[in-house]
Amino acid sequence: MLEIKDLNAWYGESHVLHGAAFEVREGEVVTLLGRNGAGKSTTLKSIMGLVPRRQGSIRFRGAELIGAPPERIARAGIAFCPEERGIFGSLSVTENLLLPPVIAPGGLDLATIYALFPNLKERAGTAHGTKLSGGEQQMLAIARILRTGAKMLLLDEPTEGLAPVIVQQIGRTIREIKARGFTVLLVEQNFRFAATVADRHYVMEHGRVIDMIPNHLLSSSMDKLHDYLGV
Amino acid sequence: MMMIFGIPAPLLFGQLLLGLINGAFYAMLALGLSIIFGMLNIINFAHGALFMMGAFAAWILLQYLGIGYFPALILSPILIGLFGIVLERTLISRLYKLDHLYGLLLTFGLALVIEGLFRNYYGSSGMPYNIPAALQGATDLGFMYLPIYRAWVVVAAVVVCFATWAIIEKTFLGARLRAATENPALVRAFGINVPRLITITYGCGVALAAFAGVLAAPIYSVNPDMGDNFINTVFAIVVIGGMGSILGSILTGFGLGVIEGLTKVFYPQASATVIFLVMVIVLLFMPRGLFGKAA
Image (cartoon, rainbow over all chains, first blue to last red; front, side, top):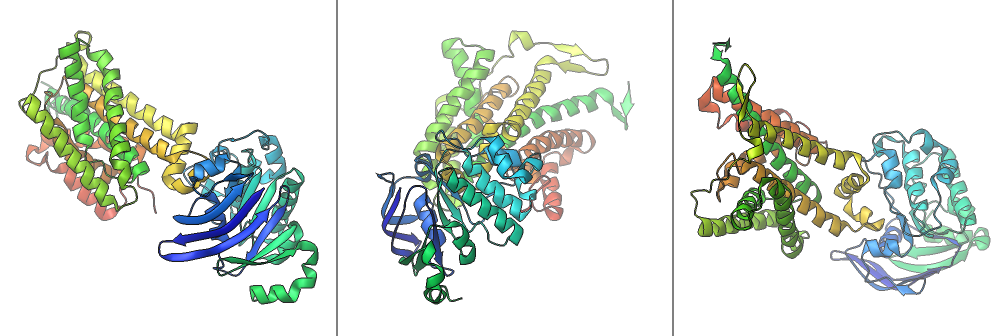
């Protein structure tokens, strides 16, 4: 579904991605693991067209997206949930939820979204999206991209800094959307969490993908993984 | 004669009305500047020139095509708005990647060029533009005579300002605008064409200036420098209201127009400086302006 080859990206003079390559198949949940600064978030931003300069190949459903602006990448069917969550303070919770335009049929309707995230329904009247708690903001950031009909979701560290009970809820949500046919590319620091949701894991280091571990081999690859992640 | 604070009532109310009229123009121009600043991050120094073009468009429509005031009130903002869109697409949009100062220099230069061209073709003495027949005359309120056209200007400005505010704060399109002001990259990543949104915003801000220009045409003579007379004060008002604040621009515009009018009654010598005095005081205690958001 998503095929990345020889992806290079730069922020100004600094060369961050050095030929990253991996693929995500339809219906999979795939994680990018790696230390801080390995290039995981930059990979997601590069796919979305949000880095100043990138080269290589990003094919989505057969179409090349490397030269496309962000709005065209989004309209091709890829949705992005950024690490900092990107909730708009000048928009109400409902406006935040309804902001991303529907780009294709098949997105979740509001009733389903509120069933998945009951907190959001309670807080729907909140005048400023940033008045929500961190966990609620994260749910809102995921919820708003489920409406759009995009079937490929890029989630950047959705569990970062959240309480264990909320992390569990986000895990349930990811399994639920996978069951509904969404494909997820997930950036995670927390591989114990990643193991509960993912089919496969790619390990990144210095802007390259250096290994792939299927989820069922994760427990037998622990030594290798500790090496990679330095934990 | 009725006296208030030792001032004859007709004089007081007359200056209050003049203040409100000036305030109406301050508010409309500051509002356009604020919207443009919010989306484009440039201070549109061409705003006064575009206001002047709006007045000239009304005068030209009448002079050469026999099109009257009320159609011009719609047509002029559309024409000048389209001109603004051409400016944004062909010139201003090339500077977004550079420092904001370049946008400021470009629009300042544009203002000089536009005003120079108009001065060249129409001279700087000014053209008369009559008040439309339907709005001529005055009505006696008992304590003062109220010229109908001036009342119309205040009402039209209030309606347009608050309609603009409502579109931005209460509608779906407005939510997109606010989001794009806050984080344009992410809004693009949702599939929204932000560059187009920016172009439309600039066009609308310019149209607002042109609308104010048409309203101003019968009050001030239509001349190439009419924008200059307003624009310095309007920049002060945008700063006092809080850069980019919509409601702040409207309320500060009207409020400072009135303060300026009252100063003319009680201490005329200070009337030209009072707004800048207010600016200094506000900035000393509230560096982000009266309605500015904390960073």
